[in-house]
Amino acid sequence: EGLFRPQTEMDRARATLQNLKQETSGVNHFITCFLSLVTQAEISDEHGVYLLEQNSKPEITTQMYITGQRKAYIQAMAMTITETSHAQELYHIQFRHQGSA
Image (cartoon, rainbow, N blue to C red; front, side, top):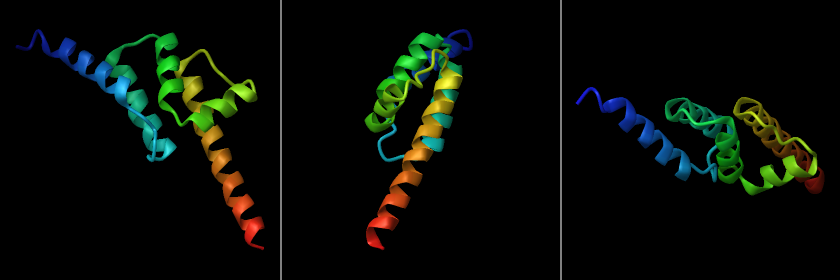
């Protein structure tokens, strides 16, 4: 049984990554879970970046492409998604605040 556990954990992490969506969870929680699963799943940067793009909120991914901030490495992409998400949150707070003034 012990011989099969690492592969089973890797397969479970890969399956979870396929279905992990940011949706309503905060970006910090999403990125932390995502990077943990990436480590367990031992996937390539290319595949990890693809999954991160697919599973992040569409408005974040769109903004990254518009501003030319797409990265080739998982860690850099995760940082960019976090920064973009935080910038969007601040913009929305400011915009709502100005709209109510």
